[in-house]
Every structure is written in structure tokens, then in C-alpha cells.
Length: 92
Image (cartoon, rainbow, N blue to C red; front, top):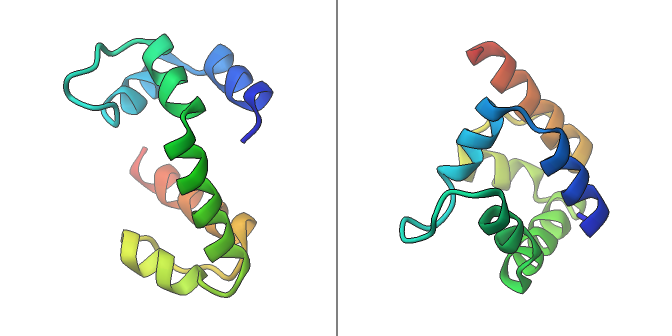
């Protein structure tokens, strides 16, 4: 996730989607776009996202999907994201 991609996401997100993302902020942080941006730009988040990307691109898709309770749809980031999108669309 580049800073530009994060900024584009935050600029184009709906209020409902924003409220869902706020639920992932630490409890002691005010629920604001600025705090969300701060977390998304943090070195911890970047490192964690890199580790997830590496796992998904190196044969760990099944393990990641199972560990996070999502259906497995194949290896790689695209397959994992497609699985998440299908799951979200079922719930809505």
C-alpha cells in the first residue's frame, strides 16, 4: 500500500465503510480519518502488511485463510482479496 493508494482510499470511502475501519483503531484513539491514516502509515502496519503479502505470495494462502476464518480460493493476493469481496457481498 503506497501513501497515494491509502490517501485515495480515505478520500473515496463511504461513511459506512469508514465506521467499519474505525472499529479496528485502538480503543484509546479518537475515531478520525487522521488517526486511521496514522495507523495505516505506521511502520508496524507496513511490516505486518508485508508479512501478509509474503505469506499469500509464497504458498501460505490456505493457512492464512483458515487462520482468519475466510474461505480459501487459491494462492496469491488476488485470490485472497476475491475471497474477501465475495464474503462481504454475501453479508450485505
